[in-house]
Image 1 (cartoon, rainbow, N blue to C red):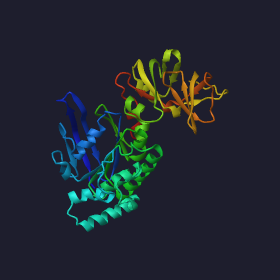
Image 2 (image 1 turned 30 degrees about the horizontal axis):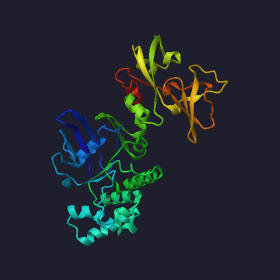
Image 3 (image 1 turned 135 degrees about the horizontal axis):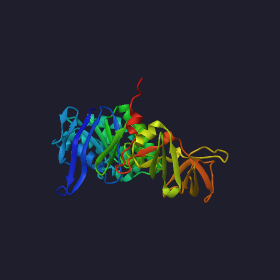
Image 4 (image 1 turned 90 degrees about the vertical axis):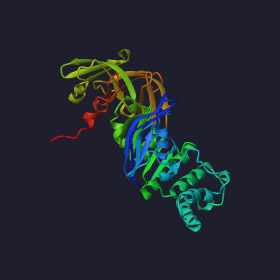
Length: 377
């Protein structure tokens, strides 16, 4: 396996009219599993294709291990790529599909290729399919063949371009687990592109978030979830999405009053860390995750409670999603035994430590550095 280094990678189309990837720099460690996530058109697949050698960067450099491969042909990069549409040869058997890359890129004998294919097929649980053709296989079987074809080559780097998108929800979960198991077993250096933020969070050692071709944040999934670098990351990571409110700020000594939503939201901050982050601002965007919003019992008269109306109740098994009229999209994720009726008035609250504060103009987090800074003695 090997490291992967992207240095100020940029990709333009239509003579610079479209910038698909804009100054992306990234280091992937040897044996690391990195997931790349973002909305459609954010540049994640284009970035992967440049690493594979299927697209030529407009500028920037790509290194695999100690080797600069920016201008090296795809066949000579020693990477294996798994595609969304499987990309199997329909006229070849499963065994021939898996052996094709070995035949093209190694000097192994026919018998050695066959033995390696059979070993990999056993690992993938498809040893009984080797004589079949792709047209005879289910979607899950095709994806296992595509994975096996990549694994059998034992490349330096594995690249996955939304490989589970064509599978149903249950099979996606199964295949997700299998890929993680293989990564742990083989110690794969892997870059995995997906549009599914849950998939990215559960699979990666580290998550990379792109938007409009620009790198927004990298980090461990839990850190990205707890400490989003900006409003986009906060809203993209997590389901249901983070709630946002544009509020005014009134400073009063060591406290600050946040108010907005046409009078439906009012919250006093007394925590020095939060008040300090607001500095002299008169406006800010507040973020609060649905799972951090809780409904108060009738006898709980705590300060900073927000009284609101329930617009919609969505039961989702273990939880209920309550859509509240604090804002157009404001959701509380509560236990399933919390069952208000539509139209009920309820009082909700959230701890100050769960608030996220973002610059009202740039969307950048006002708390991230303070939250991640090491403690001092």
